[in-house]
Length: 249
Image (cartoon, rainbow, N blue to C red; front, side, top):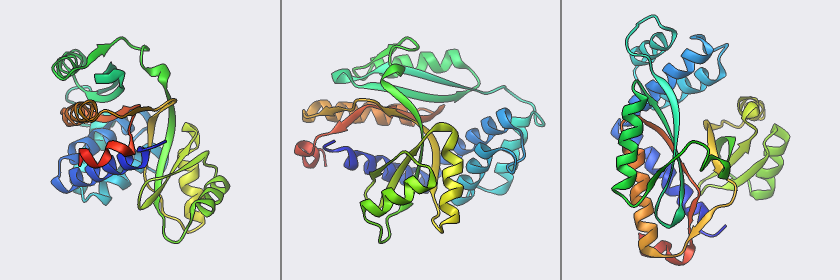
């Protein structure tokens, strides 16, 4: 779909910049805490925790922070109970948003997101009214190297992935939710190191934006939702048409 690769690359660059700013440390700590809460504190027995710890170490999160986040998840440190909540909403042009939040106060988070949406041309939506437009899938990346699309697809299918998309300097693989870490392991056996394995909400039918002003307001809203303190991930169904991409730059 036109513009998809460009927007995916923009989002990935933004994530890298966030890491450099140190902003992502708290998000990683929350992911570790939630993973430990649901699957236990042993990374060898908890694939989600193992992935979260590896990502944190790659971003140079101090080991003390990682250990503290694990103990918080297993209840060893006590403190406020945090939980995962996914909120739904619409933005300008009918763009759909799924916002994954980790919070110790879901009522506060819901109210905050409702305000952020309403102040930026969006509306807060009831649970289920947006989610049907997305499919939950696993996502991971690896450097293109010398692999062309056909070779990347062959490698991905052999490892158990479902689909491959162009992510700029990387190939982006999609998997069934229960196969994500199996695919990571299969790629490793083939000498390929995958990065950023995570669960995402992938749009079933992308909405391509062709109006510059609408695109600008949607991207602004995306950034505002992503910058909210309790936000872990923001998923949306919009793509930027190539015909307006340069105008947005």
